[in-house]
Image 1 (cartoon, rainbow, N blue to C red):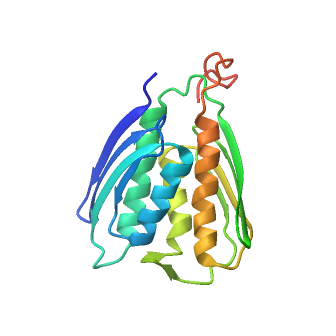
Image 2: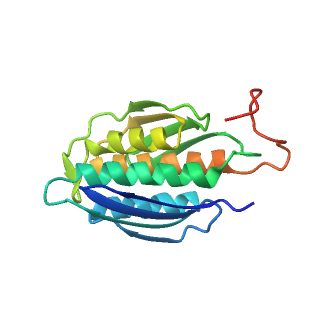
Length: 196
């Protein structure tokens, strides 16, 4: 079973191209124009063991909003395509990620129904490495809408904004990796409905 996808999105504000292999080794080549977002997507890829090539040319002279949103949309669409009909997957995933004083929990269900519950706490800095921290919630809302899932993110504690944002990305990717794992005992789709 090959779980690969290529997606792109071109608007008057951005041009995003994504190549994804769910069953990769954590290889990445990411260029978004936003240094900290590059770092977050690289660690997302590495800790999820996905292979990812992603480029974005966006109107950063205006704001980071369009680029961040369109990257999340295009990445979500790539995961949706690569996951296919979700035959044999675990479906549910969860992860706790500590980073020094920070602890983040993520739980998700690849149900095909988008529902996002963020509890990101107080982000003390407005911008980290060119990434507006208000875009953290927007990124994962867009991602979980375009790769439809029930996504809960809880920052249980944390005072360093860099650690909080990084903990969020790491917890989501670890939970996603778990949910996308193929279980050889799982016959068909893990749902009594027969579809996800």
